[in-house]
Image (cartoon, rainbow, N blue to C red; front, side, top):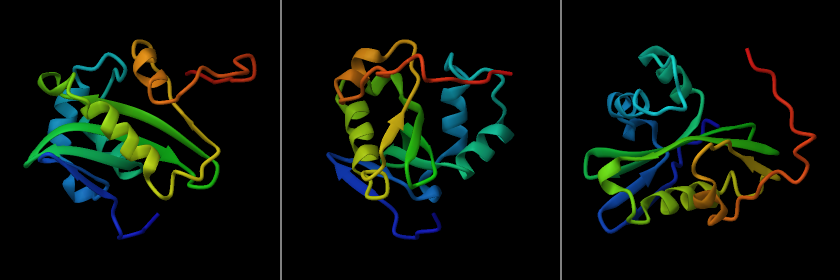
Length: 144
């Protein structure tokens, strides 16, 4: 953390960047308020989450069209969350490219585990070499 050498990839007019200055929090908030996975979202909670995470911003020109957020210790584990592509840009391979950019990040590549939870995109992530937990009876969580 604290590294000012931000990750940047460009492809056909699209840019993936980890520079926090490239994030459009209002556009992200607008999308995530419609997402079924983050209920009770507030602008304040989103701002705190973005500040505390490694965020991969996907932009077309100046427009935020996607995001992937990583929560990590940068040593052993990362949790991938809040992955989205705006609806009119889906089906063009941008989601796969965005997640591959996450997986290719030099500080994330050596990690033992990158985890995620999805209720409706299992096929998408299986295509990116994610697998179902091999020891599902070992995975535990505490919900409040």
